[in-house]
Structures are given as structure tokens and as C-alpha cells.
Length: 109
Image (cartoon, rainbow, N blue to C red):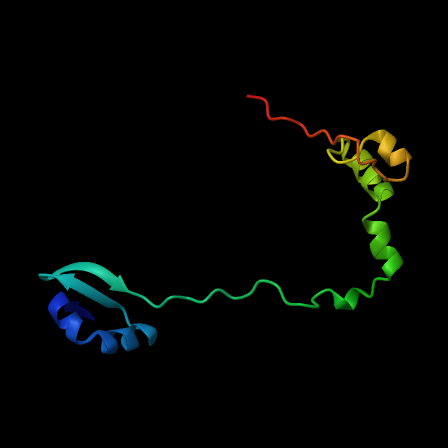
């Protein structure tokens, strides 16, 4: 459906209902198509709470997954240096002193 601007002013609610129903609504300026009226899509939530509940992980498994030992194993696996933990920190069980500075790689330009 194509309507001119003057008609669109007086029929806006009708045109919105038509667009929501899936009809192609074009508003023209002096007979030349100018804009298309389309419904706004609502974004669907990408996450649902409890989506991983079926995994039945114990608290010990979750704690182990975020330990310094696991970080060290991943670091060795991918052969990269961890920006958050030094080798001395990993040997000490992952406990970092407040005075210990965390070094992060800088971007080279």
C-alpha cells in the first residue's frame, strides 16, 4: 500500500495497524516513495536463568574451575602468558599480594 504524506497524516493509526499486520506500507512525497513503515521488532532475551542447571556440578567442581591451578593448566595448554597471574603467584597457590603489580601486555603501534 502506498499513500501520500497528506493522507498518511490523517490515517496514521490505520497505517500502523496495517504495518503490524505484515502489510508493506510506503509513504510517498508527491507520488515518489519516501519511507517505508515497518514494525519494530522486540529483541528476544538470549539467556534464560537456569539453562545450565542440568549439569549438576558440585561446589568443589565450580571452585576448581576458577582456581589458579586451572588457569596455569590453560596457560600451558595454549602456550601463552597469563596477564593476571605470574609464575610465582601460580606456585604460591594463586594468592597475590596487594603490593604485587599485575602486568598486562601493551599494544605495539
